[in-house]
Length: 84
Figure 1: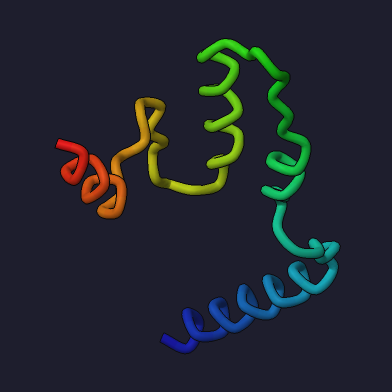
Figure 2: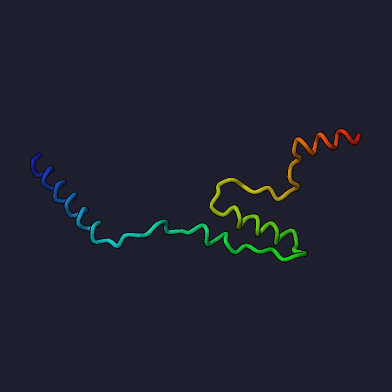
């Protein structure tokens, strides 16, 4: 039992010194702002180009995009029903 404890202590010490010698990363390995900062869609762009831009804008998010028509707001619905 004592040998196992000594081996664990030696392994822990070795790991501690190993980690101290590793260079420390500043921040995240990925910079999401680099991916979305320069999104530009030209005038008269096709639906595919707009879809590609929408995908790039949502890059780090986990929610899928909705490439279809945007949903109607409550105010828009009220205005539409008034016109009938």
